[in-house]
Amino acid sequence: MLCADQVPIESTHSPDARRRRVPYGMNPEIIQHYHAHVYYDPASSRDRAARLRERVAATFPGATLGRWHDTPVGPHTQSMYQIAFPPTLLASFLPWLMLNRDGLSILLHPGTGDAYADHIDHAVWLGSVLPLRTNVLRKSRKAPHS
Ligand code: ZN
Image (cartoon, rainbow, N blue to C red; front, side, top):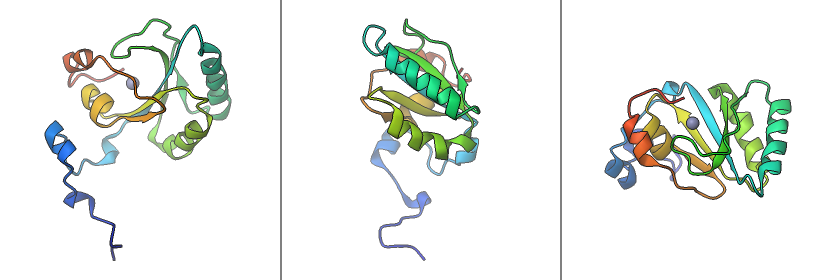
């Protein structure tokens, strides 16, 4: 039995999703992994980013820490490093990040094989939303995201 405010997923028709041509009823099982991109300013918040990184490594051995990118790469317009993790870690890692991001902006996105949709349509931001170079993502459309 459904609660009054509970609507089956297949009957939700978000105007935003329609405009962006996001398919309805996508099965989360297509998510192969997640990325959390941790943004920082080399001049003012690299130390906080380093502390967060050390704590992630100590707390979540199942997460894979990417290299530091002091110079923005790909679609990213600020310095960042990436944390890759399996779907099984989401339920414990996401609330931990919410409580421990220390003011840093984080882009959390699924890996479904469509880099553009993953970063733009399916992404979740913790903290301030930062601009992304969407032209880079469009060029790599359908190509697996790394
Ligand atoms: Zn990513």
